[in-house]
Image 1 (tube, rainbow, N blue to C red):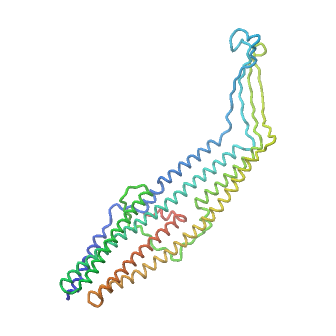
Image 2: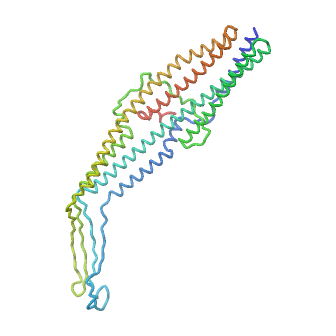
Image 3: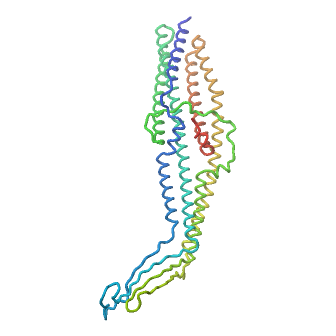
Length: 424
């Protein structure tokens, strides 16, 4: 066996030992299900829930009748002749009165006011759901970014070890007179480049962990579980009733509820033209005239010269605005779902092409180059080119896998969230 072959075998054994060490999973890795559970209740969702609580309180504010008004008065105080002697309440000549007044709301105003508040609360609930979906999408993307960064760091570290081993063996071959100094220098340069790539990959991993921690409100130093990579979906893309999914989206439901609230507000503004009556009664006590006098009264606003055109006009404009917003939201929701559907299909095809064709061929070419170089049948240049091709292809395959995972997850969160919620 030649020196070249012995060196080549040693170069193969060393990376295998490193691979065996790297195969040990990191302890207490964060799963995708845990990430989504944390994102579902993060600070942004809490803010939306506070807005929902305020909207529900508005229902209590709206669903009550006008409070009755209790009034008391004294009248007919004679400053010229005096008020006489005796007890102030029973004998003095002062007309004393106590009464109560109550506004009778007409035109179903209370029910319409309450309905508008209820629909606004429904919209706030849908807003909470929409914020949850957005935070889940952000958490899912950040989680897969971290997962890809972890794998990229491992691959670049393994490439660095392989490049260092090749450079070390090249120095031994130079000493043995089996390799030129120039070729050995090239292997050293490749090792330095690989080390720089590893440092960059580790920095990217730290940044990805920090980005995920910001979304889910956890501490730094997170690790993602390797078992959470999704399997390749149907290359033809997911199917289903797109129109039904559009109507089921939280943002569309919120816009629909706001249209209903605006309609109730418009009806309430129109009901203002039906004047509210104020009815009341008083009990009077006037010594010298009568100790038991009763007053009944009704007051009716006279809508002369103004029929609430301003309130009705504003409510009509807000109703039209809510309708336009609903149509825009529906249109954007449909376009978004179509984009997510196409992205899930396109990334599945691209990832499958790498996993099933491009990457295996690149590995085969690299293995052939390693074997040929060990036997002296090819040059160092060809070996380095094959390694660079494999490195670039492996990273592109990882990028394709990442894009597919994020696209598929975003699609499922909008259409089939139970599939992700049921993840172990």
